[in-house]
Amino acid sequence: MSLTGENIVILSSDDWASGLKTSKYHIARCLARENRVLFVNSIGLRSARASRRDIKRMARKLLDFCQGVKRTPEGPYVYTPIAIPFLRGSRWVRALNAAFMRLSLRWLQWRLGLARPIVFVFIPTFRDVIGCLGAKKVIYYCIDDLSAYAGVDQGWFGAEERRLLGHCDCVIASSRELYRRLRPCGLPVHYVPHGVDWALFRKALTEDLPEPTDLSHIPHPRLGFYGFLSDEWVDYELLKRLAHHRPDWHIVLIGRPANGMDMASLLPEPNVHWLGVKPFESLPAYTRHFDVGLIPFRRSRLTLHSNPLKLLEYLSGGLPVVSTDIPEVRQYRGLVRVAASDEEFEKACQDALADGSPAARERRSDALRAHAWEARVKVISEIVEKAPHTGAAANTSLEINVE
Image 1 (cartoon, rainbow, N blue to C red):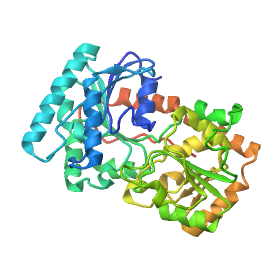
Image 2: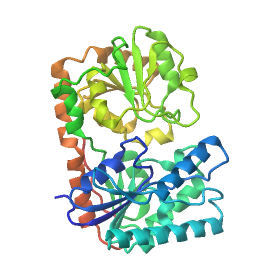
Image 3: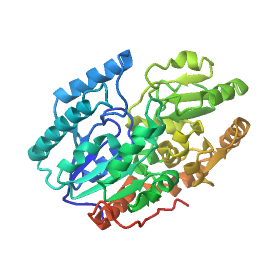
Image 4: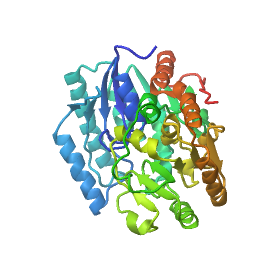
């Protein structure tokens, strides 16, 4: 059974309107069907600089804050907090930010009737406000090694995470590597891999979705990627090599690059096509008309601790998938080809192109039915219901196998 009739606060590590339908979005969407959910947008990990990128982000955050709390069509209420973005390490700045955050969240609790909420916190920067919420339970939901992002002080992050854990009742980790890292923390730690909006991506097989117009001029075979296109994640040298070696293949990229990235100069090859950001609901149409789904991640501390949500989306749509060697992807051997080198990646793509029959696509999609977000939220609900409200519970665990 999923949680029902609860008040839930999600302290997120990204923004609801970012265009990236991440695990926080899907969990909030599922929980909001039977509960009152407040989704609080991220307040970030690093101090801002006087750069064009940071100024634009601050302006957007201020505009969202001025619009107040909003009810979304999916059900959750969404609120954008503001904080002094400079000198985050200053004791006075931190105290002011924490005080304002406490006041604003307490006011929202009163306005929305969110007494005794279950709190899911995805980022340690909210640590200072958790104690004021009168929480029924506090769950640290860890989906990435956030300390591995460029510009994040690892020592500071580690200290903040340890302080956060002192307020929590249990931990959920979305990858086995994160589970292993957090296992010694002294709390119950549970491994729950990401789910997928299976019904949405299944449409790539069951519905005659028309070919998107911006895809129609691109010849087959099409090797597609959708997601965050940051060069912290994507191995662009690998993609350039693949495009150069196989000029008859067309690499199609969908998503948002990191601010400041120039995609045209980064990938000038004529058989690489960046289509920009697309509505999440349109991705099954692209999936239907791709030949292979790519996960061309760099191998770094950031990616090695990750669980690529796009893997499940590709498979739910029936695509053959080729990935660099990410530990969490290995759990799906038999459904995905994992490559340990650039040469293996190219060979795996060649093999995948021969594995796109309707029967093979159906088999891959059927295998993902059990991984729908609704099933994952039931597991999360069970964890929350069983977690003792102590903040320092006995160290037990629950694992979900993906074989």
